[in-house]
Image 1 (cartoon, rainbow, N blue to C red):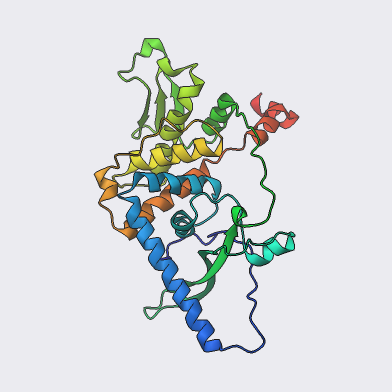
Image 2: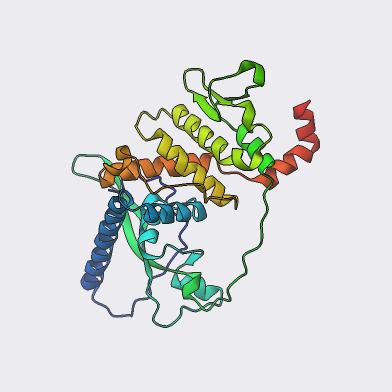
Length: 301
């Protein structure tokens, strides 16, 4: 079930098992296997729930935006157990930072990649190990006030366009394309932006992100039926990561091409959402530095 997950699954802090000097190794191994099986079942149930519960899908996307390097499987597990998670660590990593786990708190069950092994058919596969982590809200750490962040949407759009896998063309009035918004022309690998959108940065950003997500899917050879839905999810993640408005995104009616998928197929689409969102991840501070550095000015000349 986890065989197709990216190898850079999740930057979960290392955990050292605290076991007594004398313990029943067989019982311990059975316990870890039971926890691993439980995690697999929970992840599969979460994938199935995504096709029926729009609110759960939004929670999943919120988590993916906060933990971009975590695997689909671990985001599904987080969504099922701690959808409001903000910062995660295991018992030892919190302790090393002088933070204790609050009494009575239950650990969040996740999976981390272990050793590779050969299956009976000769294919190589990854073995996963269960582990427990804790969110900052479950610890004695002093809550940190969220900083107020304002992003320059025009700068963000410029960076998205700079790294676009296709041409981005702002059509003018004389071309009078018969559309009102953004249209991706897969045949010519061109994203057309209607003249009526030019200058409207606040409303343009999510639509531009959606159009460029579709271009990334096309460049990656995606041939499924959920291009529009995946692009919408990617745009939502990008907006969340950059502290932009997401109230306009409506997930109440999921497309039949997505809601009819089984758990394995859902995970495949979620992997595409994750991968495209990570390719489009924006770093406006780095972009600002490039624009003001001598090397950047030389390049633009």
